[in-house]
Length: 256
Image 1 (cartoon, rainbow, N blue to C red):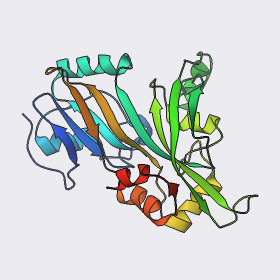
Image 2 (cartoon, helix red, strand yellow; image 1 turned 120 degrees about the horizontal axis):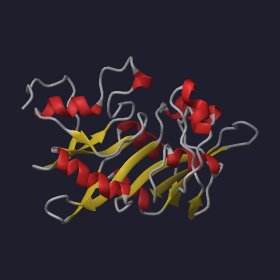
Image 3 (cartoon, rainbow, N blue to C red; image 1 turned 180 degrees about the vertical axis):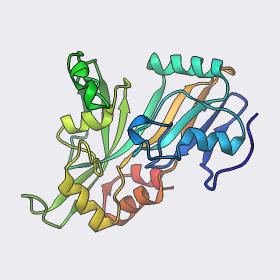
């Protein structure tokens, strides 16, 4: 066992038993130590380890700016079993996303994705790789029109989506929504800076508006189906509460 000295911030636990622990990862927190963020000394794996006083093993990842359901195994063999579930695409995931413009009510994004290099020195090697199949499903939960001119349009329009990735490629949802011409709000890499700035100024929300809201998979030892849900944070909640969204009952279930 490790020392049980706790970090100053405890991460919210969604589920915990003798096999795994599931947290609601905040936006802006790394899952584990990364060579591309050497200046970061706080990351979820270390914080959870210190919080519960034992080693934890990541079985999947969320991008640093993405929040939501994050699963850690408590033993290496559990990590391997859960890893197989993620690799076989049997884990069901539902993300919430706020994007630019009014989307269709729903659809399938079938667009292959090529892995990108983390470092310039590896760029040529990755350019030679072939793109891999990637599929995401989405449906529109609500839409918002703000009577403020932006870019070349007389008003600003946004959609709240539920996105279900059927594969697990690098930055899949972010890249798929860009491909759809409805990029995520707050996405510095794939988004539209003019909309990111507008949302930051108008709503006071500057984070990436992508949240892993729900996850479903088979428990590695008990074999029952686990359904996990992570509440949205205050920033995500603010844009959904302050804006006059056109919606049915979908939004109420997210906010309660």
